[in-house]
Length: 461
Image (tube, rainbow, N blue to C red):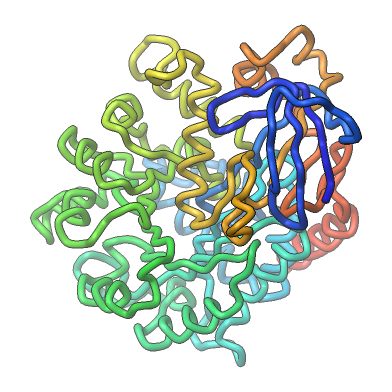
């Protein structure tokens, strides 16, 4: 048992003062506010639960910044996608592990302690399987283990190149799976689950997964209690194609044809009618929002205020990793709404008029739900059911930072999210182990050196 003490800790009801945090192995054994410090080690002034990152394509971190030159006066998501395909075609299992490990170190240092990896880079560039069909999945699992981050692996089904059922293009072939092979991959990976690895499933999008294939996966029994993620309604073109060929908008069609519930995470869902927004919020599913990527790709703005007012759950992801920061995702989630409405302080709730507190709490809850694990909360476990205790993930903010001078529980989270660009995350614990101390990851130099060498080699390929 390890005991820690914080002046302020973010508990399920909000800030708690004089908090004692007992950690037993990988989980929280007890969390008590208004406690005496006694023999507990002091963590400092502000302690937060680790933030889940609910949407990641790890390989895209290595191409961040390489698609910022105009190639067409009508540059959009669709032209960016061609750049992404060309880059993806050069990456093998060892490359993916090196890239993902570097990314996951960056995530930890920024305050993410769990990542949902929406993984569709399955096969060799010509579409044939590796000798081990799970080679690319294993590269991600090994990278997460190496970095010390929790991983929700979401092997992604990708079968067609459009709503019309066209075959995958040449550069999409390595993404593709037949149903039987995909289910075998899920079954194999599910056997590896532990306290820091959860395996769910992803359907790439409605344009890439025919209805019969979606039904086969959902009816297989392999995802009955697992997270299910899907890209949906990210682009206007997708909405138009869905209307043309399925006579319904994407979110509307999905809600009408799939058992969307709390297991599901609908990633982006940018373009919805008020009725779709209402129904989505009522479904219990999580909206996976990635504001920095959505801005970078010119996607549009999610209808946040109406969705939250309808009781909808949200989480955040860094997606293409043009930025790796929960602060920036939440800041720009709010700022996008301010620009849209020309008002301030949009994301508030009945229980709190603080934008920072509302967004942090909502993203913790939705991110944990989308990850499918008991994380994102500082709370003691049930002694009678220790397996159900929350995993011991926490962040310690830098009490010496000038940005936090004279701050207390009334304004610390608002300052953390909306003031300056200095990383305030000093220490990070995942599953009871310190993986970041004094702003440094335990293995960052070696991981960074390997990453740099991998990128130099890929650039010359």
